[in-house]
Length: 122
Image 1 (cartoon, rainbow, N blue to C red):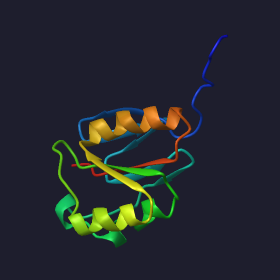
Image 2: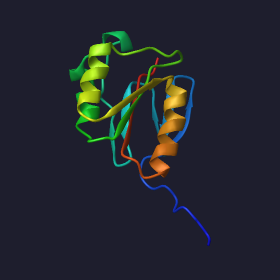
Image 3: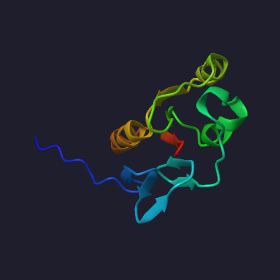
């Protein structure tokens, strides 16, 4: 039996370096939310420790299974109350560096998971 995965279509993160993320041919140097079928480029979150549920609402509105919160070059964390509120909705919230979130997004998207990357860029 031959198992071939179809190539990933939609928004694929091609690179993450120097405070920028490349999705397809577009470059983003400000915070951005990426789903396989949508990009929200006008996201303006505060520092991770100051995030509120309202700050994550654009990502939540995309109906993900999991949100990957990329917090820049260093891992930061959202307040426990925000994480708990997201989990109560049945959505995972994973916090990691932005580079790790980009790599993880591509892996989960290639598995046809409903993943959203909410990326804070320096």
